[in-house]
Image 1: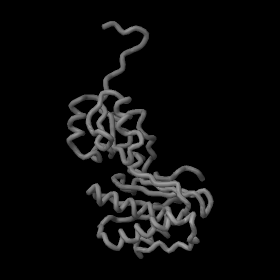
Image 2 (image 1 turned 120 degrees about the vertical axis):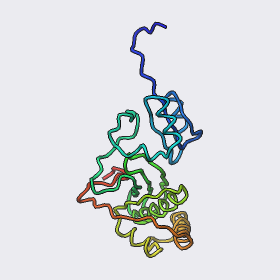
Image 3 (image 1 turned 60 degrees about the vertical axis):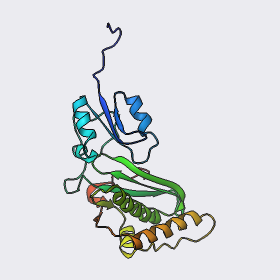
Image 4 (image 1 turned 45 degrees about the vertical axis):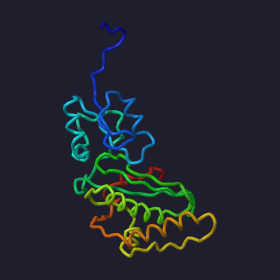
Length: 218
């Protein structure tokens, strides 16, 4: 077949480990249909079908260790340079709040790639509450997935609250904060009724820069 007007693109194979319909896809469009809007979607491109089949049958995190992989697709999320002392195979969480209190949201990303694994909000709350809820969500998420990796947070308050299994916020209770207080109660209940061995480390912002889960609104 004669191709006119452009060079034929080299075939890529897109592995979707977690998405609407996990599998191996031969076009970026088909891959997007499986991952767009899907919380915690996990995917990656590969240059050959053999490599894609091997990857699909393996743990996705075996393929997210190198930030400059020749297999990476330019459409993948932009990756941040990770400090040498940080465990790349880890989860980073962070929160953002417009005002304090105000519309608050939080998320968790896979440290090695910056790929978002979960996101919640916005709801009325504070930044400290968001940091606390992000950590609890991260702990529950990792336990549910059966993944053994540490969590990083840049909030000393949130880490302390996790150890105490109590969100020590002074946020006023009213109709606007009813939702966040319901989440706090559920988070505290989870901490008291579940065991976990996940290490939680403080992200040293002054030394390492912004945490990969940062919303970039400063």
